[in-house]
Image (cartoon, rainbow, N blue to C red; front, side, top):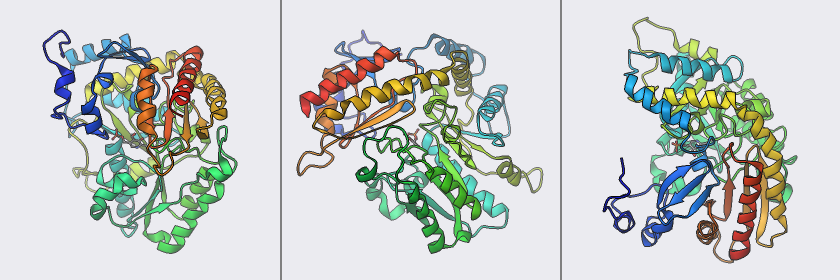
Length: 449
Ligand SMILES: Cc1ncc(COP(=O)(O)O)c(C=O)c1O
């Protein structure tokens, strides 16, 4: 346990850079670590080392929707460690993972009854891509090797996820090692036609026809899968236009292409339904999940597949390993135990209904920022929203650092990427807290805008 009363001077030590931090401007952080040094979390607030309380506007990194230090989760962790702290999942099994898989399958769209566990979103995505390749190969269609991602998509940082992802800054350094045979759809977000949409934009469904173009270019017989986030989260909450996902589904079905929904952010309630698939009424063949399934307390991810996909793998000699893939910590007992208690809480507190009730509150508040001169677009769906700021002249994407730092001064831990701020507040926030969060954000924009 980290002893906060010890002599370890974390602020000064952070200046050394021994801890090389992920997706971080390490030199900026090292220059001024104090306001960014988190030492405690409770409910919907973090506390930094200087005692400032920070409202958790993105539920950690979209992963702690039930808030922090939940007593039922803490109890489950303790009990599980004392009972079964690790179990190999290669050729052995344990009740916690089996029953959690069953509960997740029950929440998934009909006919998606099989769950493969991983430990993160990135691992879940790479697992899903391998499942798609394996499925076609077993069926004798090994020529289906292409993967179609989407511009501005984020699917984690594994070589597979990076390749199907569409965020330039995540790709350019590693360009020579992209997975072969990957192509990208255009994304459906065009502010010229859809700025300030409430919920799903009515413009943009025609962008799904881009998949027809790629099918015509490559031939369907070479394409294994299309992977999209139903709502593009990391790139700033790009909401699917009305009819868009439905059309992607149609084209995939017509051409024998698997449709993967990457629900690492949208899974487990963010859209006011178990999965975005149900919110939008579109059933994919594979769903990836992570983050909220364990409320971010213990890492866990996974892939849900249809009966057809699972049964296709369950062929060949009985003693054969059907899918030569998996992780030491797949279905970890501690993650499974936390997953169970998270689902218990979601059920007993009717969390999805709560999200649906809070959605119009966030929508009303966030769109209320439209009058600010620095704001160029506002989007929302479920319990998520994003605000685009007009770029500083000659410096596109440079808004984030001043906004982020002012946020810390105003008691907000903001998620700023480039000129966009994304919100994914905890489901347990009250209406008042959501209104207060946006009121404080208004002050941030007034100060730096
Ligand atoms: C849609 C999506 N897929 C995959 C990932 C990667 O997850 P992780 O960081 O757990 O590897 C993320 C992370 O934000 C995500 O939003």
